[in-house]
Length: 429
Image 1: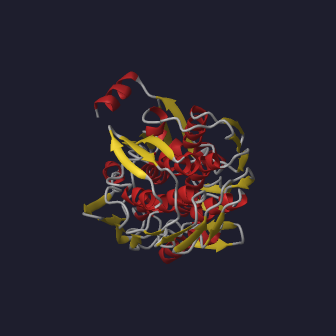
Image 2: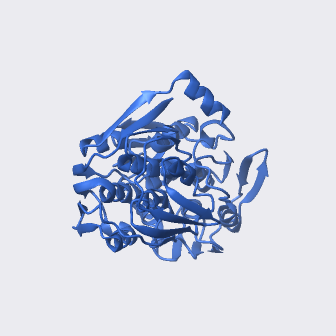
Image 3: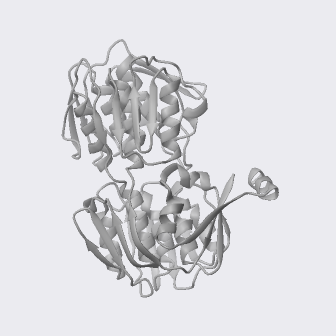
């Protein structure tokens, strides 16, 4: 295992290229199961979640070939092999295997997913959708069993707006008989990306990106080639990093509309940002930042996935800021680590009060989840001295080549192997 070390205080300059969207990739790869011929997915991020999903497709009889940022998936010999344990438990997005395998084979056995521990994230809306389509769903010994004689289109109202449930129901419904209508659907760009792939495969989907999606089932789907949209969360993270320590940083391969809520808040803080068609340019103003309040909301509101790195930035702003996360109630695990670095933050329920101003100091900290890791990278770049971050495997799940991209901007960042005592401390923590 490794740790990430950052020497803080160095300004960032230059251009960074944003990779394909992680939250699209983890749905698009399982979606390829639904095709009868080969699917090629371009602009994949180089992250561990992609590798795990490709291995899962191999487990169920598929053939995959990953070259640079392109994955070719041949689903012709896939079968409904049960996946109750193993790799399926390593990432939360493995639940997309449920919808894809149910849609293709009318049955699936999938272990309850893993990934970041962000508190209760039930899959009851997924199950509600599967049952509405005619599947019998049971939970046995930590695995979800899905079985249907046939899937019949239905009208499904989601009680809460859920990206995962919206995509999973789409995957199950595209080969069902008749029309499925998903009401109160999530509107995230990644849903449009998945719908675009499925439509290229021959699916009939209307309304993706709105709160009502209509799907007319088809008997078969064919292969296609699809390029993933840029990762709005990676883009947002680099915009935050540039706001924290940048002199002049160009974030390239961005869809600015996807990060509009973030840009609005940063401008409110006093960050100078210029927006072009497919890039965002951040100019130096990081020593005179104003405090702001944010509340995370479903898209197009402020993304919960950017709350943690944004919280680190707020420790630099003069005055008091309030951060409220309405999506996940356990997304403040990074706060204790920021306090180790000298941050003045108090947590009450779903909100955190940040008293900005005092400069952070380098410390040994631990990333408890993916976006907490990004928050600690932001903090490490701002801090005096050297910050050591363990739990790097969480960062590798969602950020493609983060270390080298930061080095290219002038950051002093490197990796080292964990010592025996550090490994022992981690096991006992």
